[in-house]
Amino acid sequence: MTKKRAGTALAAATALVAGLLTMVLGAPGASAHGALMKAGSRTFLCWQDGLTPQGNIVPVNPACSAAVNQSGANSLYNWFSVLRSDGAGRTRGFIPDGQLCSGGNPSFAGFNGTGNWPLTHLTSGANFNFSYNAWAAHPGWFYLYVTKNGWNPDAPLRWDDLEEQPFLTVDHPQVTGAVGSVEGQYKWSGALPSGKSGRHIIYSVWKRSDSAETFYGCSDVTFDGGNGEVTGVKDATGSPGGPGTPAGSCTAEYAVTSTWNGGHQAEVTVKNAGTAPLSGWRANWTLPTGQTINSVWNGTQTQSGDQVTVRNVDWNAALAAGGTTKFGLSVNSPGSAPAVPAITCQSP
Image (cartoon, rainbow, N blue to C red; front, top):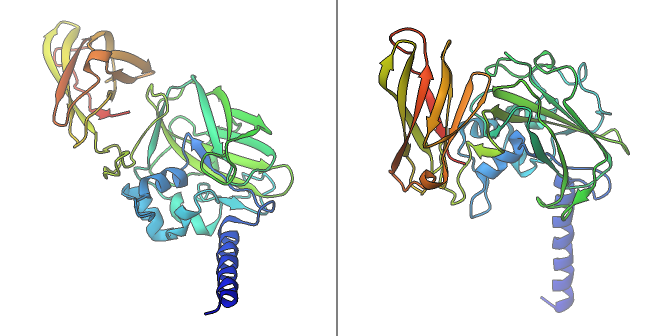
């Protein structure tokens, strides 16, 4: 092949790739693209969970895997494209019940399902640094809603499951970082909704002010005293773990060690059940009816309603694979046989 023909072939191939990217990502200046990254949307965190060193996307989290089985791998390659070009900021009455997480876009229907999605751990009422990806940047407003207390996480999200008004509205924030990459982001700080505990969904709506294009997304969160830690995705080494069990995962076992009239003492054993060292842990449980905590030692307690979280202190944060540590607590509890709560453990 002559140099001229080779150059022509290379130019044609380059044009073909550029055309395919335009089809996938949208023409520059014509379409915005993005998704909530903190607290991470389902598509974003499933994309993170699925990344492999070879550049493929093979999620381990079972909810993410089921979504991809239904909607195809493109739903994660295009994690920033949960949109309606005719949305015009419309919500209730426009997106059908049960299709909120896909924005009514059939290409993302798998993300309407239920299951153990990746979770972001938050503290109700606390200030939080949000970020929203700007794969293609355009001006607009961001609205964040949250589910009502008592919503059913085992059914697809409906409009009546959400609080009627957004808990946070952001007006035309500025972009930081490189647009067209994961680093290109809109960032803002704001208060998380108060009076929340346990699992919820933060529902995001990005309404462009220069077109009718509107983005929608579900971020699965749990209000357990967390600071934005994510569980249910593969760890940094790529080791699989599934929901809440990355390679550095942990377990917790609650044991009553002594009782008295109106109270008991307990000891919780935290174990690194994974294959990688832990640099921190937190145990979570729901207080049984009538119980209150007097004191905790060898751990730091936070509480929202009846949801209790105990985190490591500095000296017992690090746990080798298979290693254990313990913390204790004194509890006011009715009756002579105190109820033992179901307890879980997560690593940051």
